[in-house]
Structure formats: C-alpha cells, structure tokens
Length: 184
Image (cartoon, rainbow, N blue to C red; front, side, top):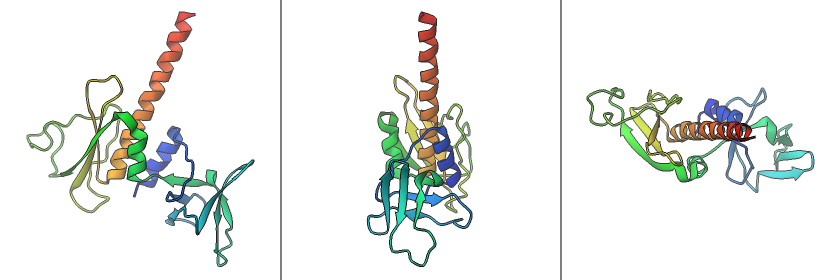
C-alpha cells in the first residue's frame, strides 16, 4: 500500500481524487489513525452534492460517523491507478534484490541505474522487511533518456515517478507562459 506521506505529496503536487468504488483512503482527523477504508457500493458510497463530495458510511450504526467530506480524506492510489496516471511516459516496472550496493558500484544489477533528477527515491528496503527494490522506468515526452525511480514498495516507486512527472509538467507550463510573455 502507498506510503501516506507520499500520498500527501501527490495531493499537494496537484493530483486530484475523483472517488470510485475500490479506492482506498484514510480520514485525516484525530481518532482514525491507521484506519484504511475502501469505497464500496455496499458500505461506503460516494455522494455528489452542490457543496462537494461526501463519502457516506452505510450500515455503521455502531459509529458516530455517517459521512465525511472527500476533502477531509486522503486517497491512497493503487499500483494500477498510479501506472494509469503515468500514461505514455511509463516504460516498465522491474523488481530487484537489493544487495546493499548503490548506483555507480560494481554490482551488475545497479551498474546501469541513473538517478532521477530532483527525485528522492527510497531504496532502503525497510517497508517490506526485505531487500526487494522496485524500479519504475519512465521516459519524459520528447526525451531520449529513461528515468528510474526506486523504492522498496512498488506503489512508492510509482508515486516517485508520478511526482517527477507532475513536477516536469509544471515546469513545462512555466516555460510556455514565459515564452508567450516574451512573444508579446
């Protein structure tokens, strides 16, 4: 499951959630620490109102919670959702056994790894309790170099790739605005 801190970074970077059945989320208010919910037509439904999106909890008479605003929740995208969001820049996912060596070492498995400019991959192997490292490869639109994003959990590697993609898109938007301003 995606690390909550990475999910917050995705949200803060501009990723918007349109709740659908099967989506996982956490409620970011005291008292719900560690509780992960899944949208389902039977238990938690999405209700669209002019005032915003509400997540309605059905059949939860033992709770004092009938609904929560989607804005008070944090979406935890699944691996397939993150891959879909990467769209045409996604090249592949590889699984490696981390031997403790780092990029630039003599290890065959790490000798071709390039670091993600501006990225912050987590290759510690801590979260899954083993030495497995997942690597998502992307190629920016119009680029000729692959970028590699590594983490000990596949969803986290996808999230690092998506953060880099969002950041690159925002920088392209800034360049286009500057170019338009110079043309005037």
